[in-house]
Length: 519
Image (tube, rainbow, N blue to C red):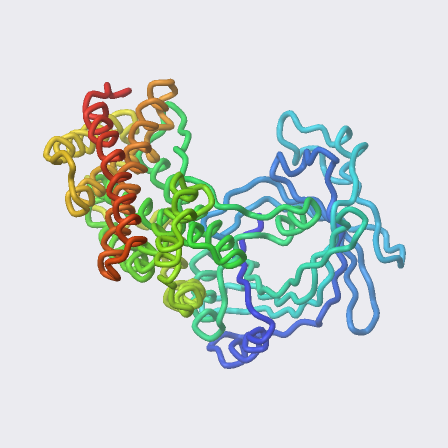
């Protein structure tokens, strides 16, 4: 079983890793540097990828010129925020003194394959998808308690043939893998190294990056979706599954944000923080005396660090290509130029990016990942409360949905017609909590009524956001008043749109309060 953590590091900062190891309290054994040439294989329809397998051949060459060849298959495992735990099998290959050799699945023991997987069938359709070529520095780290962790620094390239043209993507990362010891030893060393080296927990493996390069695809922003549970799923496994999903959702969008620098991708990172906070709040009753409350406060702080985005994200939604108001805004030179004059400070994006590779942020996630992986709440809870971890999710889901649905209905009933910004914003929290509760438990309900119910809530959220956007836009124009014809026309247009939207919103509020719960 391979258990490892991966960290991305800039080329400029990678040299700090060696110094950090030399300056550490650990026993360090520097191994010979290797030049590694790797080829990754799959079928044209990505059969191995669909099984979450990774197949590669590798040629290793030392500085002295000696070579060896091997092939490795990594099977499906689990990944909690970058802590990967996967079965891994390696077979030596005959050294042909060439740069590569074709993979052969039949060399692996037939006992490793899951039911339904045909190695012979897949072998007949294998083709090389991409290559990775890099130089690897290797250290063996021995801790005071005798644990051994391998640390490698890889610098090179992922390479793929894309429509007849070779494309490259830089590799600059270090990995920590348990040789002997425990996940706690791995986390301890990772915590130390990220104090000394500016690094970022790696979300994408070399294989994932290779597939995307070969297929000319990239990660994109996506919406939160309900998790699917087995019908008999209990509190503890559901808790782990939901937190794992939330962490992966955050890390996915951190990558998108780093690549695209879009407000939408950063907003999705904040959505992930909100989901973690809500999961911890939901389950904290069943994990008494645990660190739930501590992590709630820490992730609220993370979310608050990027709260500046909200006003700029809303403005982008109002003026963006998909906005229903875009054409009308473009017709008004005054309105368009006034809204365009509201510039986001140049340093905001850079500061958010730097926070995601900060020591504090890395340590938060490393500690959180260890807490989840080791189920440390079991040691924090009273013994007589441990039986709560086996309560079926089906028993608590309806209680959660009832509570947050009733809270939302009360907020909507108290909302006056033609509500102003503060009135609408007061309903955001209960509406968001109903939607997040649905993300956590809707996987238990397979029915069309659920989709209908949720679509009403999402439409209501969009209506609230658009109303606030129009009201704030009017305030912006009034604050920059010139009292001329163009300004008066723009303000009149905004007021007209608000009036029409408010009528639709009032009807939507009434319709929402009459919805029949699907649970």
